[in-house]
Image 1 (cartoon, one colour):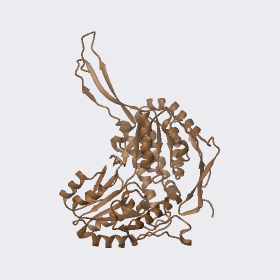
Image 2 (cartoon, rainbow, N blue to C red; image 1 turned 180 degrees about the vertical axis):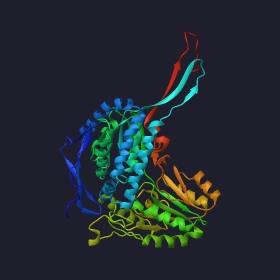
Image 3 (cartoon, rainbow, N blue to C red; image 1 turned 90 degrees about the horizontal axis):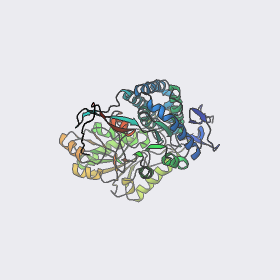
Length: 499
């Protein structure tokens, strides 16, 4: 099979130059819909590449930080225009390297554009505040100062939106960055780097290195020239990064796992609830941190809910994400494919009832792609692995609840706390849920998915640690707040302070 146009050798971007890794080694990525199709060759970077990128960023950071924020914003607006021009190309890159349906990829690119637009505007809103001093003839105010060099480490499931929602606020706040994308999704990252290069960022402000995180991650976290780390990925790796960063007195932002639940009460509008849960569970093949992996249904409506859920799940079409008629695409990689298959087997072994799907899709029409049917379990033991662990695939576990307190109890019974939702017409029940559910984002009569760029994104418990992403909190992470006192009195006089 012929290779796609993007099947070329791509380089790292360090200090304003596209260069090969000092290792001289590359690795391949393939299309998960048809693994015989090579997407591209990418640099297998080593610690020296990471150090070189950090050196370039450290040299560029002072000048970039001194540039007035509105001028930095103008460059981000240029990047926005470029991403708009290349939106179709970028969406296609997402689909052929990560697998998600092209409609989802297009939506992801649009999300990245929204983020860039919002962040660019913050160049005129990086506010501090003034306040009266307790002393005469004294001005007191705060302002934000950039951190310097920031390491940005991102996952494969949103290879455009997640990098941009870290990169854009980091840049507008005046930081230079070293961007390390997931090794399984480097093509979109390479296009992002091209766009910021074309936008005219000064040399060294934006640096890209590709390759396995295990070989270069320690350098990106431990190098003393790195002042902050923004990471999205597994809870296991994120907690290690957070601990190491804290030991070195660095700022760390870690967005981690999820096991999100949608609660359906007896009075719910099932015409809204069932499609929302199907979308939340199986959209993007379940490979997003805000995916609906659990449905908790009040007992009086359980039977009808299940009938509708299975009917609507059966109607989903499965195939290559590049075909816009397909609802479900392959899993992103052989590794993720094997993981999901293992969890489906574990679910049946632990006593859960497999009521729909669970099969691998094989045959000439699937071209060896990593396809697993949407899968639904009921009668799931609450302490089972499929009830407690993040699967990151098209697997939904359904629980029966006896009232809102029981439903919230089940929702809170996991270590994660990223997102959740409830479907009800009862405003009292909705607020009881909002006030007691242990998640950082809550939705009423809407899926567990996503969020808006001007509102904070993040979770509780094992779903995240450090300052939130997006919204004003996202800009707070990438800056230090400095408090200034100016004595403008004429001559000497006695002054006193309590501290």
